[in-house]
Length: 222
Image (cartoon, rainbow, N blue to C red):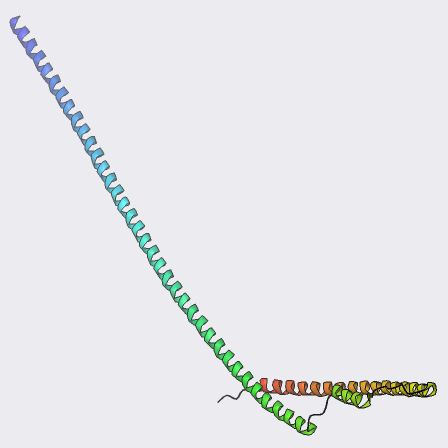
């Protein structure tokens, strides 16, 4: 009996040892599996982190590149605008100088025309004055002279009634003669005014024609 119990105990011990070994082995397998999973997670984390860092670096590089491109575009636009403003300023100055030159040429041309007109008009005026000769007395001066010659003191103290009637008749006829002369002088004055007006109008027309002919005469280019 004792031997059987010992054998049973030995068998039990062996079974227990085998079970313990299996449990230990199973535990080791689970630990290895957990360790592998942890390592996989760690590797995946570092891979994702590296990818994110690379994407972040690429994003920063793109931002810097775009910023540099915008700065370059702004610089180019600023240079083009500066050149455009310079061209506009040069064009404006050139136009102003051209307008100033044209104005000076026109002023010189008009001055020359006016000088020629003055000389020509002076010659016409001298000819007219030569034809007129000495200055004639005006109509007012003529009237004053005639009235001074005809105006005599009226002395009727020594005249009788018959002589007074004759004197009154003479005075009446004299007044009528003055009225007739006044009318004739008025008509003559009208004719003279018309003649003077016609002469002035003709002279003005002649001056205008000379001015226009000088003004519109094509300039000779060398």
